[in-house]
Image (cartoon, rainbow, N blue to C red; front, side, top):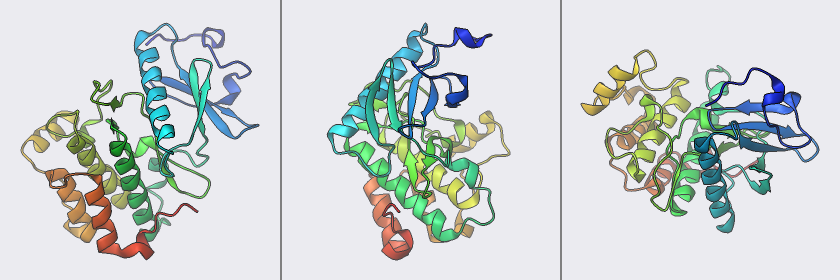
Length: 261
C-alpha cells in the first residue's frame, strides 16, 4: 500500500475531507456523512489493485446481503458512492473498545454473543465466509447492538479469501470453510466474555503451535459458554445455527434476547 505524505495525495469522497474521517485500514478509508448519519467506505489507495479488488468484493457481499433482506446483526447497506459503498454508522465504534470495561454486565456480553452468532449464521446462509472475524470487526450502534462488519477480504460462493485473520482467531485447518469462521467465532466469544483475545500474552508463532496441537485457553471458569467456546475451537459444530441454538438452550431467550433495541 502506498504511503501518503500530504493530505492532497489522498482521494477523499467528493464533499469530504480529513475532518470527516472516522476510520481506516489496509483496504479502505471511512468518512462520516453527518447529514445522513451514514458512513462512506472507499479504497485507501486508488492505485492499488489489491485495494480496489477488496472494495469490489465488499460491495458484492453487501449487495448479496441486501438481496436477501439484510440482517439486524450487520451494518445496513445503502448502496454505492463513487468508488466505495455507503453503510450504516455504528456510533459506538468497535466492540473491542468496550470489552475491558468493568461495568459491562454478563447479560450484555451474552446479548453480544448471540447477536454475533446469529449474524454469522445469516452470512453463511448467504454463501459468504467472513474470513476475518474478530472483535475489532464488530461494531456497536447507539443502543449497543453488535453489528458484524468488514467483508473486504471475505469469500462469496467459494471465491478465494483476500485476507488472513489474526493468529488468535485462525483455524488450524482449511481457512476457506465454515469451520474456520466458527473457530474465529469461538475466539470472539472468548474475548467478549473475558475482555481479551485468546493467548493475548503469546506471539503468533507460539499461538499457531498450540492450536496445531489442539491446545486452547482454559474455558471451564466461564461456565456453560466456556463449553460452547471450546466446541467452536474443537470443530464440533456443523454450522452457526448450532451455536445459536446452544446459546438459547443454555441461557434462555430472556437473557440472550438478540432483539435490537
